[in-house]
Image 1 (cartoon, rainbow over the protein chains, first blue to last red):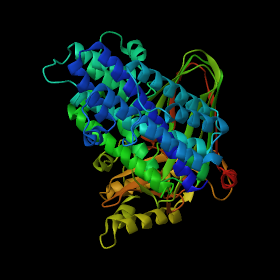
Image 2: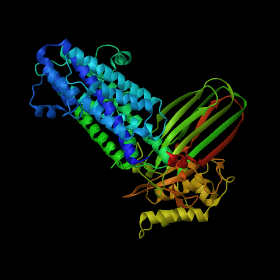
Image 3: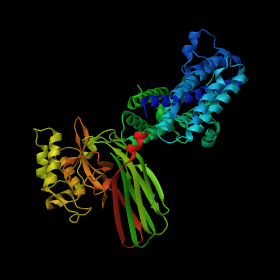
Image 4: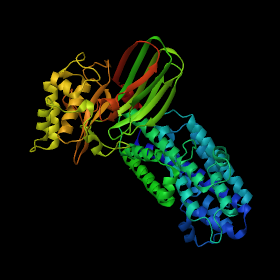
Length: 311
Length: 278
């Protein structure tokens, strides 16, 4: 496989995952705001923007952080590289460039996802935005389904690798923002808003019921952190991403007989995470730990690009 | 090198064993120069298998068979990618400080026969790495490989005095000499791919690692007189054979037992061509 094709596949994986994550983030924020009053709404849109690293780009537009502006920025803005439209557009461009390496099903899923958002000029009201992200999510599930039917070889692994790296990145940022930015001043920890926000966070990663199933009882912040970081049965947890990264890189190594820096970094990360418990993480400082994780994830991304000569 | 390992151990009991408990140190870890793709342990009767890690960082499994069984067969199969790194072992998960491996054990106590080897090793002048290579080469030249002459309880000193032994004795003598000379050293059990074509073997392999300042652990196979290369799959380590033996166990009932071990390590082939087509 040409390394250019490999790079395109990897980035399709990353962009589709990012589009899905942003969709869920928008959906969850709308639902969270439906529970609270107006003043809190601006605050939660601000944190949603900072989760995807779009807060500065948003400030540059000079718009006020109202619900409509923030929703437009996250879903349709072309100025925001992580808006749903930008992600799907870039995924589709990569897919066109690597068309021969994709199955018909995958190509159609990516294209359909793009078509749902291409002609939209406004996100509309809250309900219209919910409908929009719902259909985007459905198309992306179609993409994931298509991925499951693809021939298990390099092409499929690159797509998967892109999405697990992206997933680790977004979940770590989501947790970090919840712990350090989300709660507005004057709101008590453990209060109603705090609880609603935790619930929203679980909803973003589609794990509300799963959390209840595993832990039962009331929401506890450290248990949510444990759930999203260290529980490998949770498919979107950081450790599950770390495991999948190692397994995918091993598949490449098994096929080619070569391994490199990315394999070593990914294995070292997994080894370290397997020995961890949540108390140790909290003691070290969750914020610091998550930042170290983000740096490590970025280093693995770099090592993958180098190892497979993405150029 | 992509290696395929198939290691089967079969116990046949004269009468059905009531209960069997075994400790398996048969699962390799990945580190720089060795990637484990998949690894699996199959047991031919209903059994409980619990995984954990021991103090040396080895992955171990406890195997419990609670119902009477006339025989027990444990099969280990897996695929590993190895690289030749001239014996240097880096990036192992769960490393202990090297000083842990500086003390002698019952099996690796140095006596009169090992003293000259240790004295040579301790003589300053040449770099430590060269002296270790010389030791491995000398053991390879001086000792005679003999599968009949020694047993699992033979000590390094006994084997050295007798001048023959199996891979385990070579490793013990090497370790005893290192420790006597003040260098930490440890026992390693693993699998060896035989380049001479003898892919089916009657036993797994063992060698030793010595701690070299500035370089870390370096593995030597005194039986073959070389540092380990990409034909070696490192599985477990410990102070001596007792800490790193692949399978140890106990059972109640069953009378006398008969043990058959078959190890097959072969090179995975054919996939390189498949790749060039994709």
